[in-house]
Length: 452
Image (cartoon, rainbow, N blue to C red; front, top):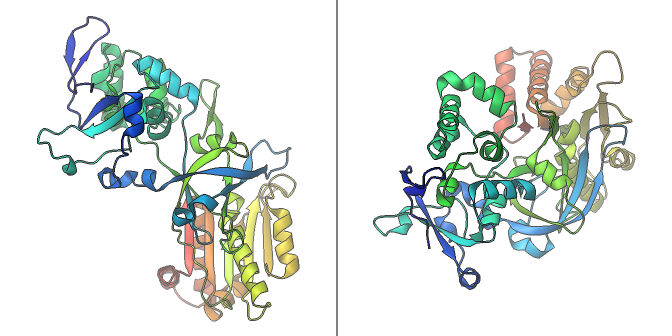
């Protein structure tokens, strides 16, 4: 039977206490009912949850570490077989791959134990309507599913919740101190405490429930309302769809940082992918990218892809190499790449491939910035500044496209360097140089995909 929204029994006194209104209700199913049931219609899913219906489970068929063992960090090359889902996972070169991560089993089990949920129970999540018209309401994720799938796939248990989420969670705390702590951190006065304890402490809903505010009691449908959704992570595809039509390659840096309590915080998606082995399934979908190669193959491409920003540039070079060979190398525009990392011996990823592209003539110029190999740090924007005249000729005379991928700060530095070049070489004001670059952006000739 469904749990009735608006009432719950407290642990301490067994009395029924009032709960906030909830737009959902849970209908628990017998095992045979779950297998016969139909999945939530895509039309009933919230717009922000459509990717759940559009994704597919695909096997990992290859993976390798790209950094040298002397580097404490990790960057992984991964190949995913999409051949069984070509109707939904067909991609274009340098599109984005959305990956739906999973919470680890220990976290899921700890939350279920704290909230007294049966992980193996099947349920339907339904609109909690008084008027009987389900079409007016949308749902956050597809059901029927098990409670385990709900917690594992759809609930963000490890990411820091927003202050508004803490405020929503507060009424379910039976202990006054727990409730007051949640309300305090959700208030304007508690912003500093929230930042220190939740954001900088890398504390998610799971730790709040199992460690800091253990008096929380919350029915499943209310938890589905309060807990943030587990969002997809996007990786720019690092393979050419012409060369690898049935596999998608991604290049990912594994995020690891030490928490204040000494434990290691691992990025949810990169950690999930780092733990996968060949043959394991990952749930993925394809999203259009802003990177599109010029239709006129004789036009140049200037690329900036330090670190894992190399991903779409690898895809572009594979595509340009393929087209160049198909056309016998005739009338193919130059390809210029600026790549940067700490040192050539530690994290110069895809080195063999880049050198091969250079040797065959696809990669016309390769400019390398190794930031730690000299006393003064050198980045890609510094190399760009030294090639002002050549860059202006590529941009202005030969109508080159410029692709930038990587960290936000790097993108801003490259943008600034390009404006300097356009202003000085084009003999125009800074404002006009910016307008020139903006016009290139509108035309799809200046594309940036950046992350913080």
